[in-house]
Image (cartoon, rainbow, N blue to C red; front, side, top):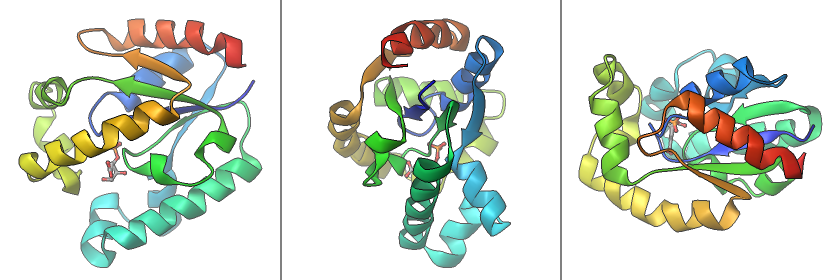
Length: 171
Ligand code: S3P
């Protein structure tokens, strides 16, 4: 099985869809933000505060090289900016979870843990800037994706089912 690499904007549902995929397949899941946090023994938010974004991007690059070399048969969820690493396509089949910006924000705001979800993501602290980031990134996401799943108004379970069906031909 080739790795599946989930990309997409912050809050689009990469984590919840990954959890559904592992329930319905034999994939094991890892997450680039979790790997960075355990490597650094501090939260992403703290890394941004203490070292700045550029340092965080360098950590993502280090993780991308490690993934390419060491990881197989795995579902890899990535932070929203991870797509910029140079070797992304070498890591696995790229699956974009796609939704309009407004829908993504609505999804976060309506979540019972909305405050926590917003607080842990420094790049969502200013919604105007976040929208500009989204607009700049979306075409890049689309260019890289082997498979696109429109997640708007769909349950994580249905997205996971659709994804597993669509990635079959890349396995
Ligand atoms: C980021 C997304 C975050 C995290 C960091 C930067 C981004 O991950 O990696 O805050 O640049 O979009 P999620 O997409 O899981 O929120």
